[in-house]
Length: 132
Image 1 (cartoon, rainbow, N blue to C red):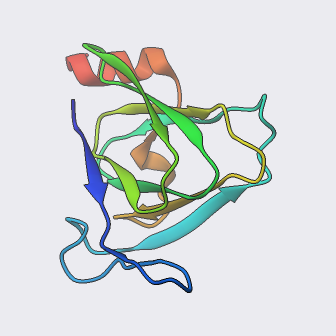
Image 2: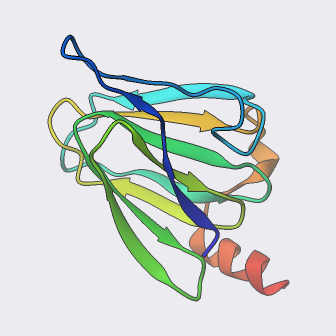
């Protein structure tokens, strides 16, 4: 599957830890950063795939599940450590759910918002992946 767990550098200190994203930590230049917050535990986010964009999802606070599907395999990955991110490359369907109270999901993207890069229906995603 076109995903990868990225371990961010963690600088430990008795006063609090720091994680840094710089240089070659992620395999693309950053074009957009946004975050999800105040998501009710019963709500789901995502529900789409990107044709070209890569995204790194980082649980800044709390936890949530990321369900990824490339039409051959479906996996659920729980993100709950702010120094561990999930890199989702192109052509991977993603859904985010099971948000804990106070969860914040930081998303670092390789592209600016471009509606034509989104596939918003799973059937259209299956067709795109199969070349239909």
